[in-house]
Length: 116
Image (cartoon, rainbow, N blue to C red; front, side, top):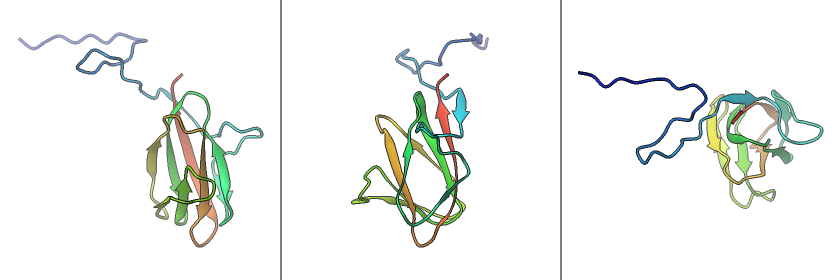
């Protein structure tokens, strides 16, 4: 006999240790700054700061051109998101991310996955 499963509304799924797994249940297309930056966002080869909104657990980024992203405003270290790719980053304790075009400006489409 197969085990019965029951969907309980308003609870988080649990891992094998019975600890709640945080899952995104909504998303935002604006950052946490004031005034807000909105998706789609035009960017250049100059540094742009994006502020993580409260309750965001990850961010999806999709640039139209190769784009550098860093947690460091000086870009001492960074990664490159290729043009027309979509990448998800966990946020954790990060307050800001910094972006700039690798060789040219473009458009960034972004979405913050949030807890309600």
